[in-house]
Length: 295
Image (cartoon, rainbow, N blue to C red; front, top):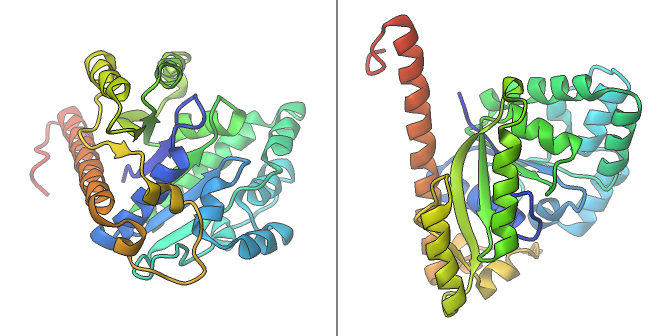
């Protein structure tokens, strides 16, 4: 099952964590999907969006983050089960009960430095590959909130995940980040690279003529398909970054047009995933001379 998606743009500040959060919660509430969110950014934005600051500090303090798992398995060659590091039932939406989380840690950069110093790059990629192989079977969708730039861990996600999903702000630097990512994907093709699911225009000011012009330019010029649904700049999405102490409904968190837009975006995402699965099935059947519509 190809269901591991890394959310990535080489440019930072384009709404990766917000996209990961909203898609995880929308897929859980409205599509009954079991979602694993992997926070792979040292800033830990998605972690603090999905659980309370106190819980985050407690888990990080006891060495329960995904980075701690990688330290054990890659640097110490220990046999550890990644599921022991999963925080279950996260999100402050009362009916989003099928989201689990692997937390980030501020030690991520130091970990990557030790990986490089000790020439553990192969072990790191092997650990990421083994983790994804098991996580794909345990969850309907795995969403990885990757750090911007091309660090060691980010490259592993881009090489080992099934798909890459790229948000882009309506500005020139954001589009340059997409171009850089596209060019990187062509290097060392034999190492593998995630299939692009497309680009999602994020943080668009619907009242801005300049943002409107950029959207038209992006849809004309980007080589990978843009999603029809955009993520507009809105107060509701800005407020969603703060974890609420008391549970609330999906529509209380994402009211009105915001929630309806997220539902359309999640449906479009699932449609693209299904189409990609069908292409894979057809390609495999063509290799063996079978019919993908049978059995």
